[in-house]
Length: 124
Image (cartoon, rainbow, N blue to C red):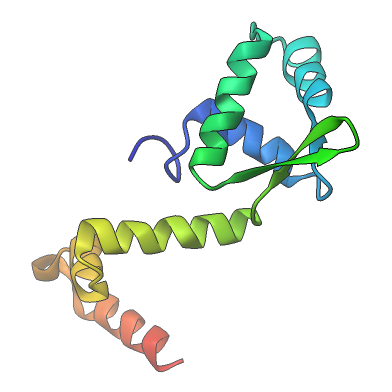
């Protein structure tokens, strides 16, 4: 898994922009923001490739609004992170929360304070 939440730095930048717009974004608005205002040296095809990759990763949907395409986040940022985290847990730690927590804290390195904090979290 590459980048933050399985998104490259540029994909994350695009999604941050789209997540701030609940109704979605037209392609021309993305071009204006990133190329004209943001100084990116992207060609139209480069941006389209990023957008299609985001669709393939489940972060983005393409809808048609009359004659134009609208790019809409398929979920909120928090929901996307939650899905990514569940996938990470399943794929890397065999779905075991115990294995994940041991990897995070290092089973042998977890001191009593860490264990107490974890116990309090679980009990709440």
